[in-house]
Length: 208
Picture 1 (cartoon, helix red, strand yellow):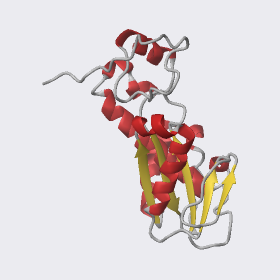
Picture 2 (tube, one colour):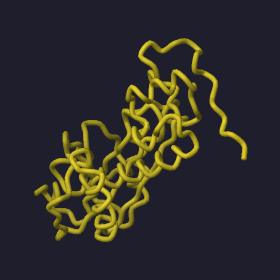
Picture 3 (cartoon, one colour):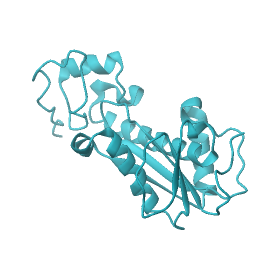
Picture 4 (cartoon, helix red, strand yellow):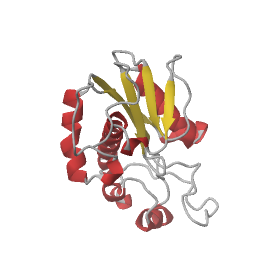
């Protein structure tokens, strides 16, 4: 089972993001504080869990966390500040919403920027080592999946319900055929050959 905490502090926060490598949709982060007596033998890095288990764990995490928050950063912001900064910004925004205020932050990965002088540690593969980061990864993943399922209804030709915006062959072929949308990250390499201007026009939602 994963470790409950990195420090002995009461309000240690774990944070993680989802969707960093996608061609479309937001990057989504979650942050939370778990009680020190929280136990769950199923909880792990969201990438190691089935969709069914992630969906089962989400309400358990939300009901047991002392506090939690989720933040989406949209493609326009990602294009403006780059995906690394957008991921960090999403995690920072989550942490600022927490009540009680964390007295320590543990972050999945190796890059972060301080939040209001709260001490932090970056932990490589932290989502497979600490329960709070794993729980944050589950919230970030499930909330982002919900978002992608919703916008799939607006642009079904990209099959975001299935690929969640990741660079699958199917997704790239749809970009080649239909062009881009307001949900695509224009600063990303959307096509392997990145053809000039072939997909620059946005597809507008059809009017009812």
